[in-house]
Length: 407
View 1 (tube, rainbow, N blue to C red):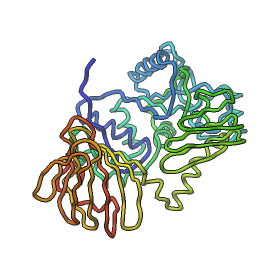
View 2 (view 1 turned 90 degrees about the vertical axis):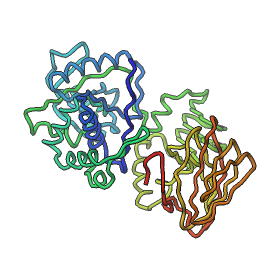
View 3 (view 1 turned 135 degrees about the vertical axis):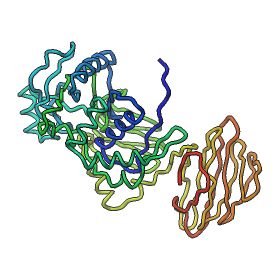
């Protein structure tokens, strides 16, 4: 069945899953559709699609009975990296997949408590997958999280759309409290008699691959039980994940490590400590490290750019502009720019001039001059851009016209 693609909703900042689901529900209702929403984490693996679809069909039956539905995984070991859902009474009216009232949610336990959960056989791993009718979710948020609901409603009503995107009103969403679906609603459903929660036992080959040890478990191993991705040479190395995005990575005499090389940074950790990466991120955040926000390759609606070098007063980038796309008409108050075409044909706006540049031709854009790059061809345009000035930050942009609604 062909259906029109709906605009992608863009958040100005992350506010966790409860606001995200609330905005999605408001968007559906705003378009006159009381749709069933399915919220799924992006870093999960589901191997048995037919079993998953069967569980979703059971979920739809429960939604018709005014349930908010979550999906739980039968625990395979006492895992401290997952939350848990406690099963209540079985719901006899559901389809072939096992469904139960939700008796409670528990965040990541310690090893002793996790072992007790396993022994009791009353608990499922919390998959983070939720299904709910749009109107029911909005009702739940109004009752249980009025502040989040109001902020999301304001951000949606005052948002702007265009070119396949919908941008929430920035300040309203920044002011929205951040919280997860679990904390914001699921743990508080006992406070209202009008909304029930059900958990469906999902047996569909589910795995959380949001940690490096899980990536290793599901990777193709060599004769030494290593998973090697990219340009990797491993000598006397066992049971390890070694991934290279940009450069040659070598290991000697290593065991049970995850070595992750990207354009931004290199991380080495014991695979058994994969869940502790969030603590490392928190430490970097406290240190106000630029690497958390400034990446070597940055995607933009028109394509993207890679930072080749940045030094005081100078920055070099490689721009890739998609066919038929153009950057905003803009100027800079603190830097000039030099463009050299290395692939394709560029249509350049420089002040009142508009002209084409071919491979190995260049243009100079003085400080304070309105300018634009455009790709009118059917292949990718690549430019080397050299920025020179007292300040080369991304916020030194004054936009006059933009296809993507940016200001």
